[in-house]
Image (cartoon, rainbow, N blue to C red):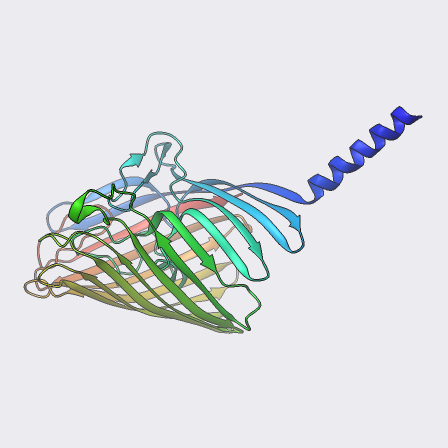
Length: 355
């Protein structure tokens, strides 16, 4: 009888422990035909992530009691057209040099503690300035139709994601106010003279979301030695969206500055929207980007797209983009090559499945 009692208590304890934690496997498989044309060279290829990066991830949370919980998130980027993994930057000083052959958790790798005061998150995650870039772009900053407003032509890596990050997220009970403060490390030796702070940086994002309105401001600054090529890189933006029935209007302003002796600056704007009709979404956007480089290069882009949902998890999509260049700009789409002041266009056709 005692033996049976002990087994019952053990099973009950295991059940209670498992009820307090959970682990989820998730992912996106997004593959599409990508066609681009330019005045110098056209290009056709199969690509990955036309409506958002393909990925494989694991996330989990454990209830520690007293309102405290621990969590983890491991998310690997995938190139589904060829089966390889995405690259990652380990020190915020390269555009993505590690990985690319096997599975690399290049999109996110974090561990966190959360309670009613907010969340402390450690590891690799989005740069705070990047959230506005995909949240307020009708195309999620993906594919041929993504906004031109932050297609940076500036020298130096302006980070999408940062490694070695320490992040604090505000709690969700602030009446619609949300935000995050971030600091990240380049992890260079302290005796490296002028370059010891390269890759160090930080930033903040502050927003307000209530009902149909969502607006946010963010800024980041990444440190680099003041050479002729780089210097500190600052990215600042302001974006918003507003829901009006079946239509969502979006817009944003983006500014980037490289702290060279010339103080090279880039500015971009975007206006767009999503109209939900039946089992699909019609998307449109206008965007522009220019820099203070010689001739003031500028690229203007119009984008159109449609997503048709076969189910909650599977969709078909098509998108088109056309960019005009002036002032010596030569922006091209979908891997095509175009000459200075010449136009470029491209289209995507793909399928997306989430799990």
